[in-house]
Amino acid sequence: MGQFKANQLVDRLEAAAKARQATVARFRARPSADDPIVLARQSARRAVIQAREVRVNERGMARLAAEAQREAEALAAQEREAAEAARQAAEKLERQAALAAEQKAARDARFAARKARARR
Image (cartoon, rainbow, N blue to C red):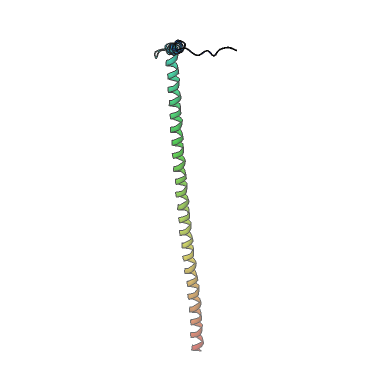
């Protein structure tokens, strides 16, 4: 059976140093801020962001236009209903006036007939 090999302090320090060196190497391997690839990536991101903002604004404008259209349609419907109610009220008044005139004519005819009978 083999003996258990404990990590010695030196081994652990070497492993930590290698890890730090690998991290530094990764950091140094990154392209600089003025690299054409980085600049192209940044401009692509800006273009995507601007396109997204344009789409959001277009949706907002479309929503406002649709809301204004609905309000205009509702207002037109209210106006039509008010005009229809006014027309019906006018027709009702005309019918009532005609009925009153017919009733007056009938009453006058009865009165005239009664007067004619009384004169005979």
